[in-house]
Image 1: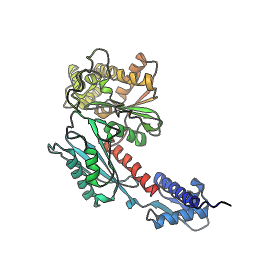
Image 2: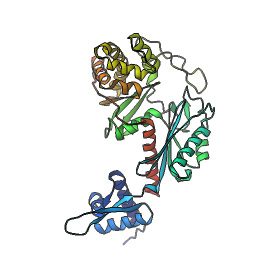
Image 3: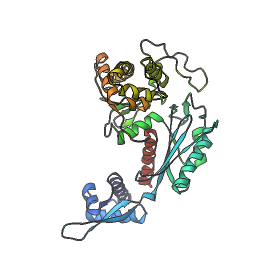
Image 4: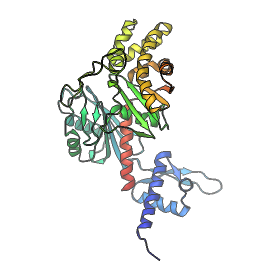
Length: 392
């Protein structure tokens, strides 16, 4: 009989991964529960847990009373077996969070770039601040994901276009990896918000949906088959450049090498923060931010309906264009405008899309608590860290 010495080791690796994935997904479980849900025998489950315990990856955290027999030990993944960092980098503030392998946030900080031209030292300082707050060294991080506005080049990992973040430059990605002495991922901020939405929000468990982010700018994340669709050049979702009736075309968009100016045309000119604020003021609702303007209109009841109708019609131009091509079934409105509008806005967008499109998607408001971009960055970093942990 031919001997295959690699098979037992491979089976052990498969069993170890199955047990770890189950514990990370569901929390503490007994040996019997793990065996039942993974299909492992009691002996194999015991051997698997013993190996993981020896590696410092799982531990007994309590007991669970059984029937007539003795209580069964409850196993859980050791929280300190790995840590990750997620960041949101904006034009005026950097937010950073550190989480353990179970996804529990152990530190969250903000850092003021203070006019720095280069974002590499700014991000380094923010991560160091978060690690100090979490009382751990940066070498303990197994995943680092950074969310930022702009187009990320899938070939180099660098941010190619970010008109209000000139601190990104060619080579930033490589410099950060060298500075932190580990792999770093830079991702579009709206894409990360969609990751959070699918895990914790209105699109929980939904494989096909789009997230329309209406805030300071306008962005779109596309989730197909449970995976982000970024496009060949990383530009999928740059919906602000969509040509729509009634406004100028977004011409001459590359006026400076590697940078994009504020759009003078396209859908962005209808639903940017400035455009929404101007629309609200025309209807008698003046406030400091676009989100606050929309909140005033919602609170005004019938008096605010004309403003919300107009805003919904503008958003529907983008939603309809996306839906007749992708037919996602679910559209989530996020960002400060989407949050502020709530059901009063989503119901109007849904109806406006149905008037101009053969596709009528469900339109819902984002329900992710806290900072969706930061949460998405942590979740993406956890995915990377867990894959590294499973394969180590």
